[in-house]
Length: 436
Image 1: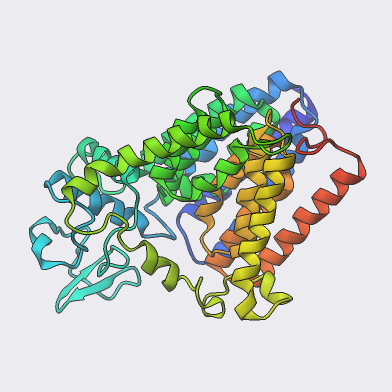
Image 2 (image 1 turned 135 degrees about the horizontal axis):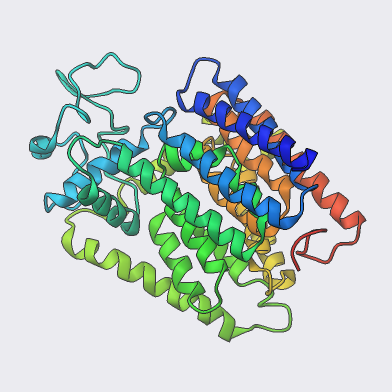
């Protein structure tokens, strides 16, 4: 065994130990979280010294161990999985999840002591009525999740033994994360797959907090690992979590380079639109309320209409008045999409998808770290490590704040990485040292 192999193995063991501690949440979570990311960076640096065959073993075995750390404790920093469990239970009872919020007395018969405990004093509880509280966040509003996510919640409910609570959702996240890892190893190679395998965001958000974003990420990765069926898989990803819709311009990289390549455009957008429509159709037919649920209320609540309320558009607001920031974000994102459509590499569509997705998060500065799981997966396909700062910025702003500092540093790292690659005259969309 070489010295670097031993060092990498020891680093991964340390990373696993730190992630286990992280899974139990506060106190001192910031210290442990930053330690996890520091060990992750050291592991990536050591990986550069190993031959591919030996590295592949450590990426797969280490990735499975890292992923499993998310299973050791209940959700530590998010209550979203409680809504998932509730939506699955409601559907199993023959009721559309879009028709009633959890606080509706009409669904009182479905309440139990896990999702609706008697003690309302804990910090993760919301009051529903006098003497009634719940672990479900936003219990007074309808669900926000798209139809394929709702179908996933129903399947998880059917597969969950009595008393399993959050464990099956966490196990589902772990299995999907490992499936992404194996797909990345086969398609992109172990060196870039390590960005996904050892990233602390994966066990924290995909597994421990069991965010359904993992389903969308899996479908996006599969879409970029194939040519036929790409549009349908991306449509399924959108029907699981709307955010993957920003990867569609990447799938259309270069379609405006020499005229308009209508065949490529239609080959992606028509199947994607058909899958989204078919996924929504059963819920449209069986629901009395809007299947968009709380979507528009969510955007308003999150401050995208009033940026100063929740530190949205934080990087832009360093140089622009608050009122201008939303319009500047739309304009800049439009220009980035146009650049990808005109100059993007059609043979590397994930590169364009990474630029658009990462830029969207840098422009909007959401405080939710699980949104960046998609960025981590695209980095693992493309190799441009500097975009990982977006995932770290989301976690820091969500758990500790402030968003302005975290996302500004992430943006500077991305710009620095771009400048270095331009200096070395890398081809557009092809990072230096990445897989040809």
